[in-house]
Length: 344
Image (tube, rainbow, N blue to C red; front, side, top):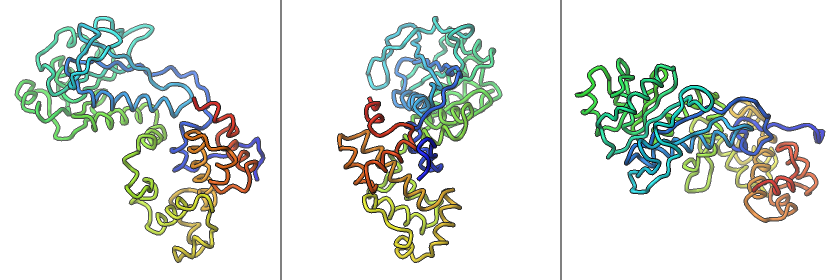
């Protein structure tokens, strides 16, 4: 067993799964300020997908990476495409592009029934934003106000297919892409709710790196769990079939962990071959991955149930609650009892 003062680190697969719960290093980095302009009848799904990416990004780091503010055109009460009225934080005229509280990113939220007519105050604001080299974005048909402002001239944009003809006819200097998302210099555009999420993840990756986005995807990866209960890692098509079988065996045998020889017998591979598979594809050893899988399962039980710590230790294959507590603290920086107290 390692020294109790030494913190263990998860391998890259399970580090992403546990990223929101690991000890964080404090930083003095100022959050990137994002503004969302909510046009009347904006797409609620596209907007919430974009915001979800930002909020989740804040969960995987010690200090918040982003802050966001919503703006109505003339009122703080804005009706979405679902007929639900949303209270924006401010109105357009209160937006700051310079000084304390200035925005770094400005995104226009469109929707199927949003007006395609130019709103001059918004055009002026978008021009001023572009002039200051800020990042601009458009969700659904949010590219239309960008086109009215002239900031898309000579560029390619993505927007909802229903508006392709309108932009092609009215803005000959703007090229409409058949793709659902386009990244052009400091301008990002997307055509719907799914592409809104991908657009924001692309922005986050550009600003904060691949590791942050990978951790976000892991938290938002509920669709990666199949009907038989296996996780996305178990069914990752980039992994060899034999390795995926091994991962499923481990996932299904948490309470009574299988030994390496038992795993080898199940898949018909030598111990050495199994070790090479784990090292090549998961950058860890089979025993280490198995421990990380069990401690991850324990973390979920600890934070999501009222099961006693001693019962969790047994359910996750640890020889004693003391051994479990030591392992938990080495990975997460606090003992299980403290983690449970902090879960709220």
